[in-house]
Amino acid sequence: MKRVEDNSYLEQRGRVWWYNRRVPERFARLDTRRRIKESLGATSLEQARHKRDLLAEADDHYWASLLIAE
Image 1 (cartoon, rainbow, N blue to C red):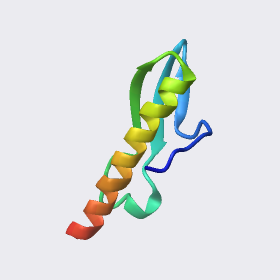
Image 2 (image 1 turned 30 degrees about the vertical axis):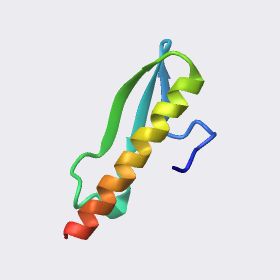
Image 3 (image 1 turned 180 degrees about the horizontal axis):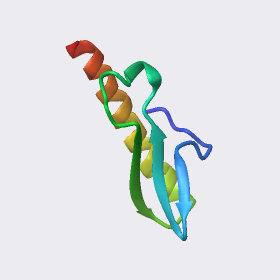
Image 4 (image 1 turned 180 degrees about the vertical axis):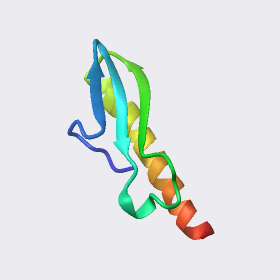
């Protein structure tokens, strides 16, 4: 799993971190969501990064599977 050390796809609302990612343009015709917003339920940046990494990897796999199924 690729670990992202920066704060990509992270947004803090109050004390809680959220996963906030735009659907890449190349997948927009296959995935009608424009943005993916999900509470990570984490108040620490370290926890948020870990959970973000898992969700980002899952999204990347999902989009790859959409291309394969096409």
